[in-house]
Amino acid sequence: MDLRVRRTRTNITNAFIELRSKKPLEKITVKELADAAFINKATFYQHYRDIYDLSESMETELINNIVRSIPHPDTLIDNPGRATLEISQAMMSQTALLHILFSGSRQATMADKLEQSIREQVLKRHPEYENDLEKEILITFLIRGNFHAFFKHSPAHPLKAVEILAQYSESAAGQLL
Image (tube, rainbow, N blue to C red; front, top):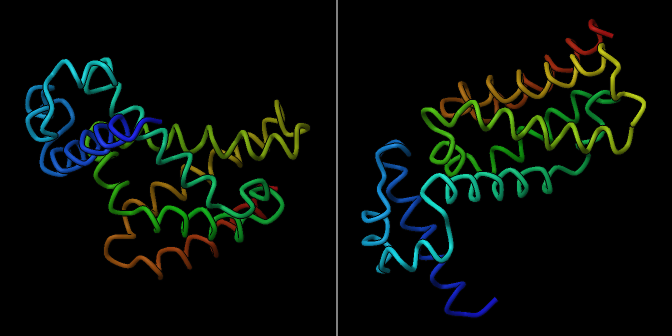
């Protein structure tokens, strides 16, 4: 990628993160973002359709980075405590950006994207789990439960929250299976 394009995208994403940390996505305008990024609106539209396209792109990139940093996402069913610990640690490494990009109306989107991405990893290793209602429910329960508990409790007690999540995931999975 051309250095100028990379610099422009970096300016856009940095300006977006700054604005998004202060206000809801729905309140950010392209003009405001362009001014903050020191570009004109036409330059913004060369890279993104609108603010939502930019947000979607950044969310997807963040989720992909998180899932790539999980050493064994495919072990969610086999070793839910370990997988939950790894998922929580991966999210913890990106806590600030998670809370900025997925705050307010975007929080549900995070759970959807995280579940979809990790589910793909699990099903690559265990295609026999697809259409197995028990496994599907367990995958959803562990990912979404982990996400919501992490998002709610990690700001106050990050390490303790991760430890408890891993412990309860192991216990809950054992009871469900």
